[in-house]
Length: 160
Image (spheres, rainbow, N blue to C red):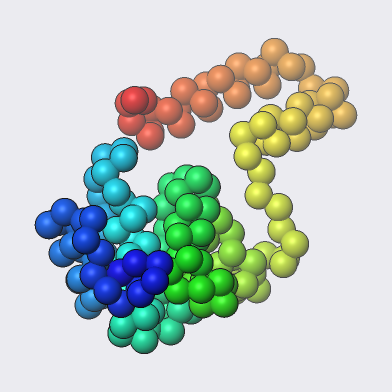
């Protein structure tokens, strides 16, 4: 599998990586440390599924944790199987993929198509505006906010 021929087996993979690329039945979870070649393995596997086994691109979902890895994966796939094929693949972060699914199936989820997703900073800004507009005691709300944050952290487990 090279940029010249996505069907040719990649020669730069180690044994576990090559097995992961060759595993074509069902889903595959690639779990490994930083810099171990996860993006490369997933990229080659997707290219193999599309170029060799003729799996329709829209039937493939490749998710990762970071925007950087998702962008790199999409760029590599573009070089391996072409931009037109890559457009139909589902490649992105977990968050972006879930947002895309919610936008596509917003009615089934009970949402408007133009719903908003607030990050932590957006949430704090909205709560701050509400406190100010409603003339609430910031100290009372602040204590609740800190207690709520502590509960959330405790429920999520120890931080790294």
